[in-house]
Length: 188
Image (tube, helix red, strand yellow):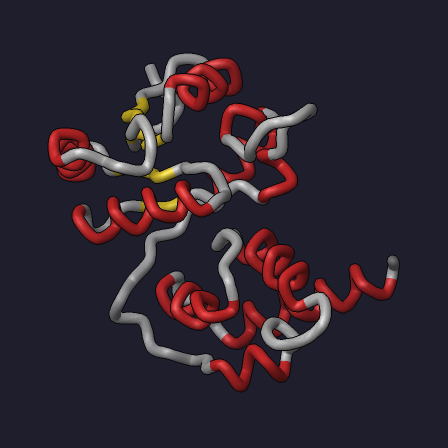
């Protein structure tokens, strides 16, 4: 029996293999790349209706494309995000779920979130600029770490306001995460 009620959507068989190594028997749906066909979307819809779905894709552009496609066609799916550093291969290669440690996979799947388009917009670009998250030196690294702390994944500056809103991040949560970023920066 799977340790998760939900079915985990991953990109390929190496991801399924890694999750099986980390958790034992686990139910997955493999998208087989970022060009998800209608048949696969229908399977994901059925899984969402019966057991729920957690999307766990690589923390890269194709992985983000898969998330957007699934979210557009299957409302209410949950998302788990791996930090980029946790998905890096030991040698040459691209980022991938298949490279993550069992601890990183567990942490990502414990911090699932469901985006909502109805969440109130609490932030705008000026808030992000004032926080040093866009338009300044080191803003990309700051956004990457912020995404890890809030479990919302990495975004570029244009996407961050939407991601904060979609995942219902409050001003308090953002302030706390920024304080953590400052604390970490002062220890460097």
